[in-house]
Image 1: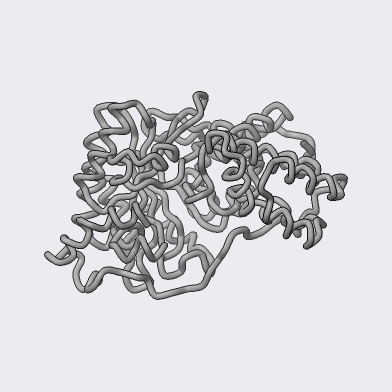
Image 2: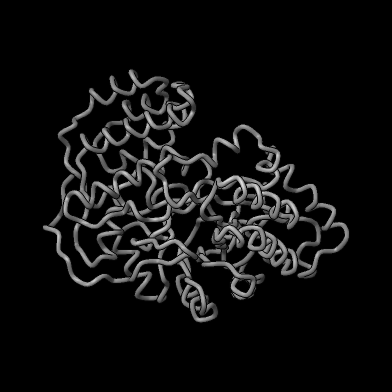
Length: 405
């Protein structure tokens, strides 16, 4: 591991983040991302964070790493894949699970299962997903528009989790679109219902991941929610971005999503930055491919030794790992078809592993930005902030279809 300068130890930029009983020394949260933040990726991020401490920096191992979203219905039904998704390493603490739900009763049952069976130390609620198959059922970033439904889900989960001292948090977006903004109401409701923190992605559902995140909305939420931490999310591509978000918004910590794709060492940089250090990781291609290989191994383990499935999963990460490096289109294309660890090793061996960190070409946005769109919603969803009878019937079936979708 290499760094731009020698580590320094000035005063921390932010104090540790407190989420209920948990003290997160580095005030950074890994955003739950479907198909990404499984046990394998979280392990990699924690290990890299610990390596930062060994190298004289700060530890990113103490950040909060949230598992990818699972639906409450699928969890209650104990579908095998959902049970895999909520699995954690023995040393992973706190164990964090994100729930999606459109029904307070099912959300409560899922939370009860997690806490009574000691499967989670922290529950996050998803009210930010902009994916059409979710929003057209009234879920994700569409749901806070219906204030009573939102309140009911939050209340049910907090009620089940509180006796076990398991904190509940909420992650949301600004609203459905510029004309249907929900985040201030949702933040106040969540605070009143007893959540331990609220996180805001500074985009609407209509924006998806396009354009620029509105950090000023995070500042306004911080002004509105005063008794629990407010976390900012959106367009954090570097440690410097995180520092700037805190400076501009006053948020208590940051949530990082696409910025860490193919770059688990970002959590080391963030921990250093918040500790007041200018320590930064700048790995050469040899180290990056070594991390890529370890990620693939962890995925094979995650899939119970199924090497083909693990290698299929690593394919989507390859372009992110190699961003900015002179890998060549032929090798990149072959890596995108890799079907075994041996094939991965053979292809990596053909690359110039002495290539240094490329600097600016490796920085900046990662993942698909997409473009603005009209949000798919249930019929007449925007006519009122209350559910009508037809909508009530529709959301009763929504979770089942999202679980199977």
